[in-house]
View 1: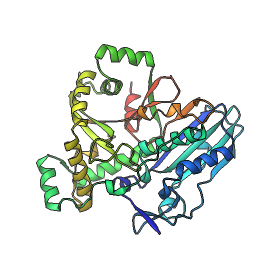
View 2: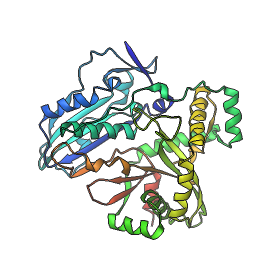
View 3: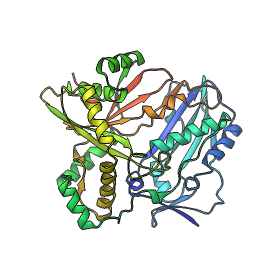
Length: 389
């Protein structure tokens, strides 16, 4: 029996689902897609195994049957609909009990097109891994070469690399936030409320408009979108003078010598900084570049995070109880544009539309259509705030 132990990053996402849907005019037949799915998953046997709760690990023998591509006839439905409502939901409880595997794949026939849906356990893959697998699936189907990711959990820092005393001393020295019982209850309440709030508020910016904003500000796309998204939210809080910007950061190549091609979870929110309401995109970019370019500091934050979790220390880099609150001081951004999901090609052309993963982030950046507008998606309380008159 082979084993793949879940890391602290993985266990944090154990109850979460990651998914994607791509809608096309046409796609290769199911047997062709099945063969390329088998090929793309071959280097990742942990996805074919079963989760063992006692060991907090994926177990497999090497003799597992492939993940079956399920073909469904959904004629009577159109490409404009929510694709996730047309397939069974991924059941995290069944996954955690070892009754189902980490990944499910579907090919569905529609009145005016066809779609593929991939969904699975977030505990085994963050966005970088999930969308890499989906893109490589399309590339293999198209007859293009792919390079397998690195499957090596030992690359994640050892939780015992520093002692409990060393961890506590350092997080206090750095001014990490102590999570009191009241803050914990607030955090859990906000998390539940976030999951129950299904509505989103979407602002679309054309490619031409983003180019103009970048040229005028002298900043890149991410900084421009962060500044714009924050400023629109701040319009609803005229008295709020300052806010703290957080960004979901793919730490591959940035921390702990974990390579760009690492397979698994290695992303977490990074505090970019505290800004005034009149901050410019150029100012955000300058600060973000310094923060995200400091490999030593990012590596230390990762080590302290995993060690704090290991020792049960009630400290974190920021006050997580303020995330997704009614009167937020933290503005939390997940920029998913870099995955370029709207360009995945299975040999029949780019998709008509790529549907975003529906993860409960406060603010997401997404592009659904090739050459189409960028969507700024506000979720949870932020969506309610944006609807205020």
